[in-house]
Amino acid sequence: MKQNIYTTGIAVLLALLLYGPLAAQLRLPFVLGSNMVLQRDRPVPVWGYAAAGEQVTVQFNQQVKKTVTDASGKWRVDLDPLAVSTRPAEMIISTKDSSIRLQNILVGEVWLCSGQSNMEYSMRKNSKFEKALHGNAPANELDSARNPLIRIFLVRNDYSKLHPVRHTWDSATGVPLRDFSAAGYFFAKELYRQLGVPVGIISASVSGSRIEPWLPHTVQADQHDSAETGKFYTTMISPLAPFLLRGFLWYQGESNCFLNDTVKYTAQMQTLIDSWRGLWHNNSLPFYYVQLPPYYYSHSTDRPHTDQTLAQFRHAQALVLSMPHTGMIVTTDLVDSPDDLHPAYKWEIGRRLALLALATAYDRKIEYSGPVFRSMKTEGNTLVLSFDHTGSGLVSNDGKPLNWFSIAGSDGNFVAARAVIKNNTVIVSAPGITQPAAVQFGWNETAQPNLFNKEGFPTAPFNTLEQLVTSK
Image: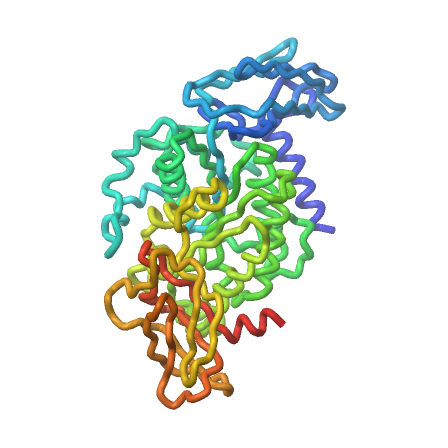
């Protein structure tokens, strides 16, 4: 009951904050503003508040839409689908007594990125990019970012408080970009490079947050901290709907991995995806997410962990792929030390998410994934492993023998294995294992395996025993 009272109170406060008193002047939600990007090719909602029974007119792109507010003062119109436009346009929303002019509006692609600190990781840390040990780190990106067709909107986690500052859309340059999600920005940059249309990216992330605050408060309160359930969903996600989006990006999980969450996290992510899609009334909105990179979770002292805690959590993340219109990028290679919970490779995180989107949401014929285990068969005392997403072929990315493979017999005891590439499969064996039954790959928190495809993507960790258990 206390939970419902709390969230109801927050909802009322948000209404007052975002829209003003219901009988007062014409008001818009924060996310509708000058400099925004509107999603192309679909009906575009425009909504807000005014006095009850007031006629509201919306003019944009030679369209004129009219409606009358309901008894609570709320109104909404839907613009007809818009074509891509790089020419700044003006939207006028008016009643008989007042009007609001929104300027410099573009039409293109819009995405929402969310999660915890690795998604929040801001562009002001761009000097760390150049210290990364491998990859093509962008140099001085904050100084060189000058594309007026990429727009950013940062959702503050103080939207539940009365605040006099109206946060706005900005071009992805200068001071506004400093505080913005690096992964989100680089996603938008790659999307623009490939599509050539305006890109709007919304960032709503909170450092250290578990998944629970991003779930609706109606979720059964059996989580580790049920008092937090719904907190950011209510204050940072729900107020954005129904602003038209192409899809979602998610980079979160470290806090739940520390809690040893596994299959429960799978269910929570599925609930999150369903609930966010439900907010936008679109069950096919793409939802792409980041599998966690290597880190020493076993060094944590708050609760027991092993060197396989992360592997189990990654498996829980991978199980979410059973949902339609989802995708996951693998990041086993994107860390310089497993001591670093916040690796600097955010430019590559953004790029891989963009390639995933380009291939699956925009139907581009490109390779966007590393090898993914498909099947195995026994040949004598070896196992022959087949993969999807082999691209132009399997390869050891450092030219050394393949690593991080283990093999087990019927007793389930894994030992280090020898693995070689043959005809785009991997042959795995180990001395003393004459009847191999299972394989592990990258099943350790420090694993940075060298099995890639020639397109430069790492193979996803897997454990055939886990997959057998999950399939039962």
